[in-house]
Length: 551
Image (cartoon, rainbow, N blue to C red; front, side):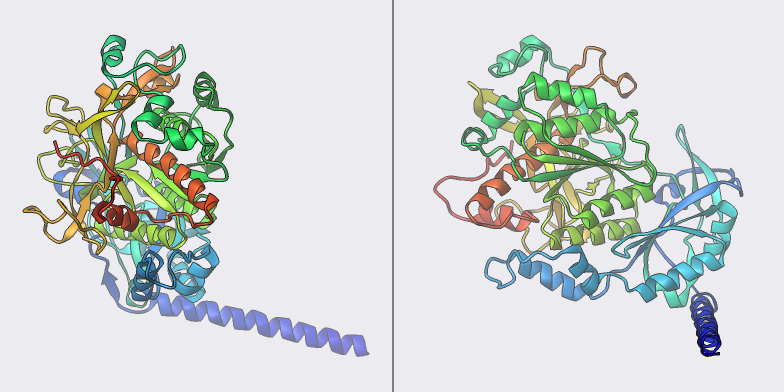
């Protein structure tokens, strides 16, 4: 009898819980779906305005969507970031953990549930919610996406390219409109591209420029000893500072061949650093047309910091893959440094997507991660036309944008450096090739970006790019080893590569050396490095920390 009473009570309690859960779900669904629609401006693909309409997109085509959510307490976050990087603040270098960031600034579980409920009520399937609640991944057909966001998705042609995109900005219920930063995946009009260029110099030409310092194999391009000598890393390396106990995350949108990297390491006697692959969004890790970029990044980081651990984050070249891969680097929080050499014209990215990336990079800065990004190879014309534009993500204020120079050595050490500019190389655009730079159209100039040359006749109150530079001219390129023929690598393996794709990982590897040295002195790692870089540049010192390249 007593057991029956207990059993009946349990059954009753379970029934009440089920009814309660159902009521909560219905309440959320009603809250998300029953009020007036709000248009999310800035969410239509910019390239649609230039393209020719072909036809309506296939209604049954599957779309992978990435919904970026708004951070909470953003003013408090901005103040905290200022304090973390202010040497006079008691919070200086008190970096957050991912859990602390989530508790203070991430979207709440209820906010996530509201957006999820709306998406599911329209027939979309939720495939993932990021651990920091910043991204919701969903999938569905074109027809379902059109119904969900009250837009039309068409097929367009621009030049030789065919792509699909939403014709109008999406709409969502007003109750969740303030929760959403971006809706990505309604179009495939853009893809990030690697920012490298093939070297053109012959062996004889390069030997005239610098003293050879590498073993048999490469026919042109600078090797590890050249780079360490040029950028004064040799004393640190000779003293045993080689990147021990440091981890560099590499953001990649392609795979690589492990044997290629192993051959590079073997040729230069760099040992065997720990290399871990993290595959994102179902990417299979196979080496494709962008493999040369991945191998370049890995090899140049090892050239500067051969003992540093490398985590290679590999995702598909879609907007969802882009967001999830960057976010995975930040939420994993296993690397103190991150490098990316994949970029896209800021104007093509769209403001909404840029704001989602900015939220990710803010979390990285709060956690003390140093992000380095190639600034582009098209000079001041990153969109491939005659309009002034900079590259994303180097445009972001929480990224260190790395530009490009032409480096000349003198007996294995620094000789001279000049601006990389080649108006005759129109591979990237009609204005020629050169280190990317200029003024952002999106991000305001940060308060730490100041000093000689920063405020000039072109200043307009917006972020200036790049922050720093290193060798990137293909004529003074880097020797790397790559045999992935469909990526343009030779069967022999050795190739000389330039572009800001190389200068970004060079700085990332150098930062690993700096972090190791600082920690050996009982100090914190540098974290988001831009405030420190500009402070050093503006300080009066006996030994200047930078070469000021102005010609």
